[in-house]
Length: 92
Image (cartoon, rainbow, N blue to C red; front, top):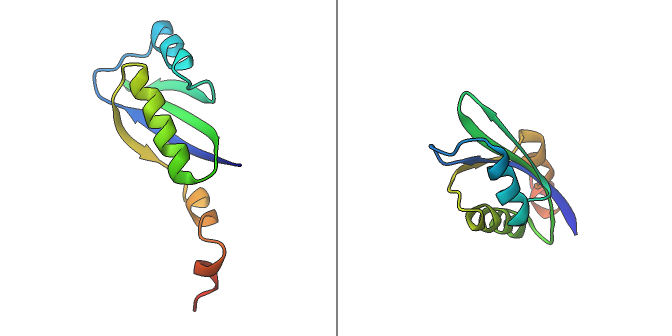
């Protein structure tokens, strides 16, 4: 398995609280760090999975199990570039 790193932004109206952090942890988001900035709650994940798609799908499922909605998902450009190794990177 590989570790994938990405940030999930929760839907508007979600407030950062101890209860939210506990609900996310209990739902399976124990591989994420929760923070908020300007009223926007985000979770930084370092999720192990067989593929990027599996990591993202499982993270979204876990966030939804905690009763939260997902507004968007982001990855750092370096992480995206690392996904393009192998046959795609060898094309000219």
